Length: 458
Figure 1 (cartoon, rainbow, N blue to C red):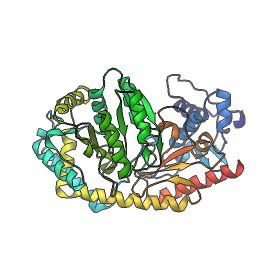
Figure 2 (spheres, one colour):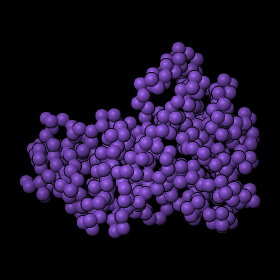
Figure 3 (cartoon, rainbow, N blue to C red):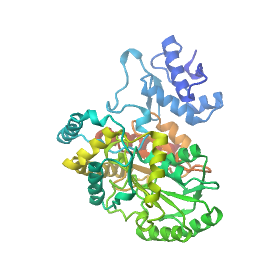
Figure 4 (cartoon, helix red, strand yellow):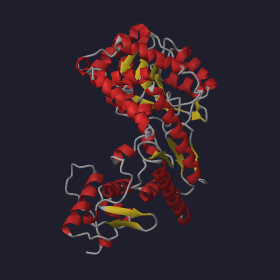
């Protein structure tokens, strides 16, 4: 059989289609149907034969590349590898495609800093037995005291009678919406927003409604109109270094949004996931909404997603008990071990050092992006972990993803971030995670070359 006519035979119907494609490639290599050096057919050809979207084929080829079955070459195609030769060279610190697709902070690589982080873990291990017990989401007295100092050091309020610790920002948003949900509730959000809010709203049976925005964020007049149409609305915002746009709502617009919410008694869930890495961000909107604002400050964008914790300020004391009950119902409790580790790092200064490292590394990576993607159009911020790239005129995201599959950086189309309606011809390209600056530069150069080739051929 000529590899030009090869079509994957997907044998496991219950597998995700992209996994089935990768499995088919591996099986055909093992059986001899595909041989080392064979060039796989173009992704568009396979998509047409199977009657599926090209993005599924792109992900399947990418999964096959991750497993070491094939290797892609910009402008030449995708070739079968010799299984005896092992996997192609890649940054060994990447763990999976799914990891690379997430918006992670740059990981510390300074041996002294890593040693301090490990020392904190050893300190926690010395007290392991009591940390294996149940704990309230409010946090212990010592942890609350340390949290207050950290929040104040980062320009945030700490109100003990309104404070709780949740097992991550996602869990905190889920619990807040659980408390606020009532008949007729809808969730208002930005037109481009954090994908997690879609999953949470779907789980709770809540409709997401986009609010028109401009370069400064959602428009006050559009917010006013949305609340008039949906009186039981809750507003969700990610106002600082928004994922994926990297935009921060300026102080004046925050004040205008706050005024509209106060006038209509509309609650706000302020997802401040990037607060601890942003520099000189305006004060939280919740500061001016003491009776309406839920402020959620996750810490994973500083320390990594494995430390699933978020500091939460509820609007006023009566909301605290329902919030704690909602956290318990869905998640039982916040991990005492994780909280003890965070408190140890804050107290001994490690947290501030990690914070400085992440900010400096983000700046370095943003500079690399500006240098290597010169001529491309994208939104960015010196402290963001990603860029929001607008494809050259005439290119569509399916073609771009097909050409860019298998890269060692996370690339997602705009569809993931748009609650309703059609996607935009934009891509989120992640710069963080364990990839080294040198590998990042190489990956972005490949992205630039691929986009330039597509633009020229179009």
